[in-house]
Image (cartoon, rainbow, N blue to C red; front, top):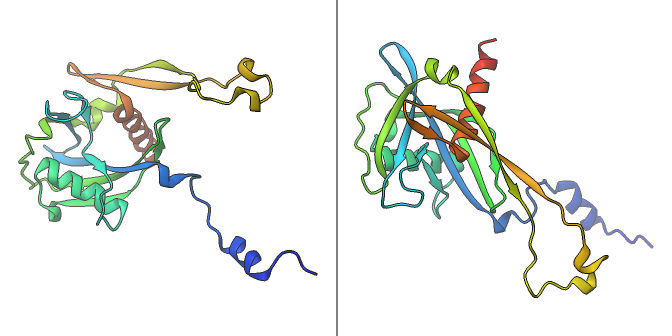
Length: 209
């Protein structure tokens, strides 16, 4: 008697891997926008307004995937057009960048994009205080600092220590997050934005070799 039914074999053959427990994660998509100004390539950043979380911080345009978004790319473009006030036909997505899974059940999917040099910015003051347009040539030589945030696990009071080896003396894993810091003309770029910026600058260097 065969213990493995054909239907189950076929199920596992067709199974495509994804992030375990992905339904418990929040997904967000952002655009890393390039624009040509004065015959030079620039990157566009935005300063978060005082009306949103993490006010005053520098970021790329983007946000959470919403119901009705048909793709991550659509989310990235929608957020950029809403926040920077640019017509969708003035934005072109070039491709995917490496995505980030944070320790806080958030997955960020970045895309590289181009904003037409003819586009006009009419930022949403509800979300964006101002924009920064920085030459790529300057960002490539900008010094980067690295600092570390230590992570540790702390079970809640109801945790069943009696069910695991060593009980309350169990040796929990620890870890750390590497934070990158850039200072561009007095504007501090750090956090996820800085990590993505590092990734983009590395990709630019690789493309130019």
